[in-house]
Image (tube, rainbow, N blue to C red; front, side, top):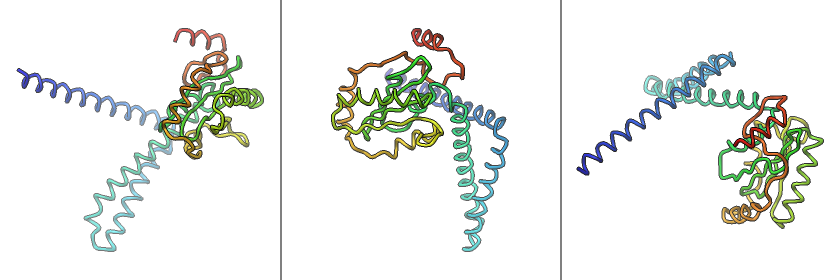
Length: 242
């Protein structure tokens, strides 16, 4: 009886794995179709990468009289390069569309790789300016988004508030934007990754517990970029429903 149940469980697991793989392939195909409609250079770039990489590997093989042996490897590497180019161009399109929209920085922070503790909208204004708090190996990072003349003051106020609790822990502040001294949205993740590693994981845990008492100031904003012209009262209504 137990053996029969194990077989059924194994079959069910295989079915779920196949279904997940099919769904993932479907998502990639849909992303490819959308990107192809908006990015006319996508196909030439992908085909070009396959031809160039396969040609280079074939040329190396030709020098050693192994061209036909290395050609399949060149094609595989070329396809891999095409997939990487596809991913990079999709990412660029997504960030370009999100740039300048309220909530875009919070969305970008939530989608970062690595062990980061993100608390969105620890401070905000009714004009949809916001400050997000990120904890990680560098220490505390305050990320502001919105009108520079307003969000800069908002970040400094939050920095003073945090400093009272964290003592000597490093505090970094970032304003997201394309002006001088600001960090573009698409570079936000890499910028944080380049910050010095000052804390160990246990210290980050202790820091998170300490800052949990601060709470948030200002109206909460729904996660993700919002269309330009969104009204604050609609945002507050959406936040209350969550």
